[in-house]
Image (cartoon, rainbow, N blue to C red; front, side):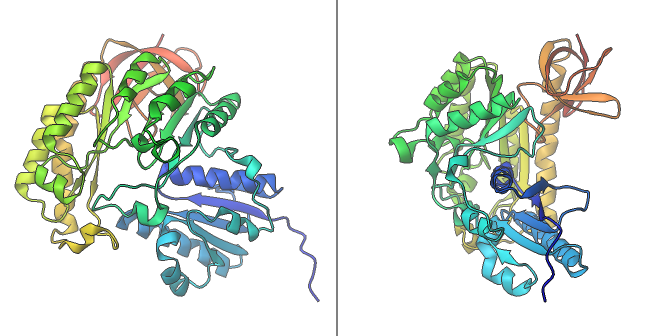
Length: 435
């Protein structure tokens, strides 16, 4: 005879990978909560009986981390500390059948677009009226806003279209309504994310409508910062920069991954742009908005990359003087066109090239930070650690960019803005005193 279960289900969601995954986890949390199911995000306290692992499948390191996390949770289930382990996200979308064979202890696997199906495991209904309702996993003063899903680009190194499908924009009205709800809950900074921001609106409105969306979001009272992430350089709509200059609550910040600078590599990567065109674009962006901070992301070690290509990339960084740079080592991904090329470089060589490239940017970053010493800047305080406040200027995004270490004579409120005087510069951080 079955005994009646007395413990109420509690779900712990573990999110791996990018901010787009984080938003998916927040949406799942909102749906579970609406169905009267207790849910937490990456809780250290062990009082849950169900785990959902939201995986990343972007590159080898991310896949390894996802698999290890699944195995850790399966071990907890084996020990009797968990009743159910569910897996969702990009890794599950891409390798579901293989993983289900290798890790049979997982109770169910779900793809990136199967939220209603996952909810059935909890005897929960997907509630369409809750579109845009999320339980934030970020601090309450900032949030990500996913404006589209998927990607139509065919970059040789990228497996995202295999896991996320084709580009699908969300309607402007829906995004504005979600942003209003976030602001009403205390959010002051919204970061727009998508696999490709500049493609926004082409499917829904038959034209690129990111400028129109930006104007609509900038009209929201109480929304103090709007930040743009992941803009593709080819056929970049410069109207975006005009809107940024016109609207005071759109940060002078653009995250535009370029991936490389040598024409040979750009062609091999299927980036649909040349170095000369990128330099012209950057010059025009800075002409229209001299105050803008440009962030880019690069890849080291793509098949066929030579030492000359690396030197050209370093020269490009010296000439362009980006404010922020991130770099990945190339990961040979099945299903991409790059996978047909021979991946001859060792991981050690890729890492060495990445460090060589970043050493150039490190000097540039320090020089740019030195230019800020003595300036008064507006800073958003994110947290307090070891007695020091850590904040960001409008030129810095969460986790990936610089922080400002703020000293203050009186307590500062987390999630509030303050004017500070920059008094010291480091390679990637600043020190300041609150006014």
